[in-house]
Length: 125
Image (cartoon, rainbow, N blue to C red):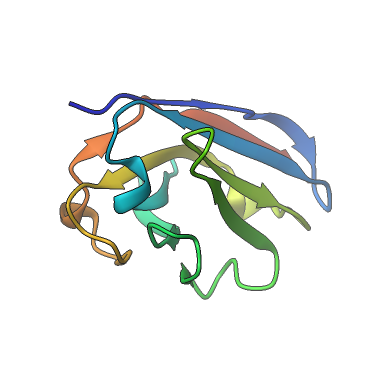
């Protein structure tokens, strides 16, 4: 069983930055790919970014490339999402997810087994 707890969401002006963190329990954290997804009101959940077990491989949605950076610290069992140059369209609930038993991230939501409760990010224009 893995538990994921996100933090770091909030309200920020367009052009600003936020850093989301996800704390994970479980001994197999370093072997599991992690991902961040977002869901805006009335919209489907969307892939944002993913990272491999070691952190050496990352994957991004086109909409966030060059603005967001995913990273992980396996010693602390945490994965982070640094969000820069935020836009109003980034407003959503952001959730981290663990792809247990798989080393590499994917863009497919159903490939991730464990999910956090989500944290709200609101970008004002």
